[in-house]
Structure formats: C-alpha cells, structure tokens
Image (cartoon, rainbow, N blue to C red):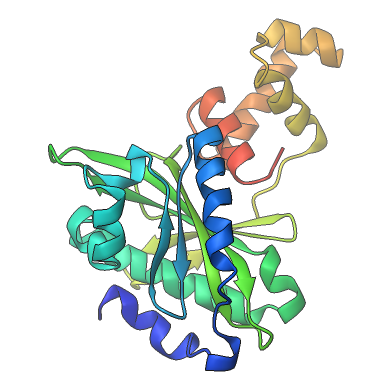
Length: 250
C-alpha cells in the first residue's frame, strides 16, 4: 500500500466542488505567516492529491528546496521517512480519515490530529518531529479539500503516538506491535490548577515564585508538575509547556 492510496476513495470530489481559483490569493497569506512565525508547514490538496504550498523553513525540507518537495509530492515521504515511519504515516492518515468522517459535518473543521515521526536528514541524522493536520476547507458534501499541516520538534522521545483534538478534548492513541493496531488511551486533560502552574512556568518563574503567586507551598507546586509530566508523557517543564501549547491545553 502506498501513502497516497488512502485518499483515492474518500476524496473523490465532484468537479463542481473543486477548488476555486481564489486559492492563489491565500498563497501570499501563507508566505506572510511563514515569515512572521518561522514555522514549518504545508498545505495538502486532497482533490489533486499533492502539496499546494510549502513554507520555506528547514525543519521539514530535509535539505531539499521547497520547489523540489512540491514536485516530488508524496514521494518525498519515501525519501525522508524510514519504512517503519512510512507505515506509521499511513496509519496516521487512516486515523485522520476515520475521525474526520465519523464527525458530524458541522464539527469537522474543528478537528486536528498529530503524530510523531523521525525525519531523516541529509547527514543521516534523525530528528523526531510532530506532524499536525487540520482541515482548512471542506466541500459542501463534507469531504476534506485542503488541510494545513504544521511540523515542529516533538516533545516525545520515540515516534508512534497519535493524538486527536476535538472540541477541546485531547485523545491519545498508541501503536500496538502485537495487534498492529492503534490503542486508544484515556483522554488527556489538565486540572485548573495544573494549567495555572504551566501558564506561570511558561513565563520562566521558579517553583517558589509559582507557589507565591498561587498561594500554595513549593512542594505542592512540585506535586502538580509531577502530575503534569505523567499526564503529558514528558520529562521536564519545557516539554510540558510546548506540548500543552501545541495541543491547546493552555
């Protein structure tokens, strides 16, 4: 099974619902967003089954130029992902589709899904990245037309975890080698106090300063941080803040 196979049936969009020419206007917006944020992101046209925009930032390009990646299309993934991660990407895309189409049409634009992959760099180093996808535009019949994908450094230590955000709820899935399936874990959520600790931590305050601001003991701050690390499966406060911000938890 090739990576692009998953779109052939689900995205058979009628010509009457095909992308409008006005999309060219949004290219300038994407360029501006890329310059001001320095994020690595791209846009997939599921009707044409190809990339229609790629930001000119290095994290995703793996030594290739933006034009080269645009021309390669899905073949790009065969060059920068291991065989194992290519299988994970197929599972990721399948899970994205499954979640997308079980949702009522009016909720589909609110969905986002992410996964972690190793990108193979020109010097053969592997960089673990987080790949997040969300719809930009769907057709009147509810099919996905354009999707925005953002690439950032992962807070995880190994690839394989898939997360889905829907209406403020974050669900996590782990790949099971025994069954070759994705296993859903409990919903990831933070308490009000845990969110407060993270928000203040993001400003660079120490545990004592956080305690003073929240009128709690320093050991209570440490207790909340341990709970946060466990829930988010991260090792330190920097990773916790990054994960929470990337997934809309704070």
